[in-house]
Amino acid sequence: MSGAGGSSFPRDGWNSGQGGAPGGEGSNSSSGGSGGSSGGGGSGGGGNICSSLFERTILSSPVPEVITKLKQGGILQIELIDQGRILAASFHGERAGSIISPKLIEFIECIQAGFEYIATVDAVDGGQCQVTIRPKVKK
Image 1 (tube, rainbow, N blue to C red):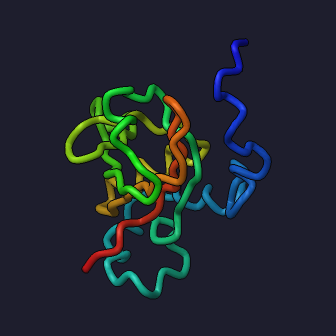
Image 2 (image 1 turned 135 degrees about the vertical axis):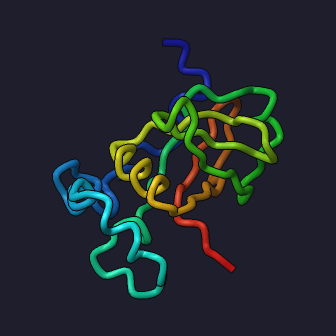
């Protein structure tokens, strides 16, 4: 209603990237837990969506004190909280906000299977923070 900064992020195409449709390739992850144990190789990936799962989104319930510390290109850690039901983004151990995504179930299942994800800060505008979530590259 107030519109203060609410329209500065582009909305067209945000979730229309790879596998944005709920019934798309992401639905393969519901087949169970056996896929997690074979996903350790990393480079092959084939049918394992966890190694290629990504999402662009705006942090939900952003914490103002943490958001003001974020800059474009900054890295947030993605972790499960609330008994594995919520994805949170943290910056140096401080909760920056939570993740709401059409791919939430896939992210949760992949993290439970041992995959790690990070979020790169794409933009910060007032209290809003736009991020891209992707698999963490293991060194």
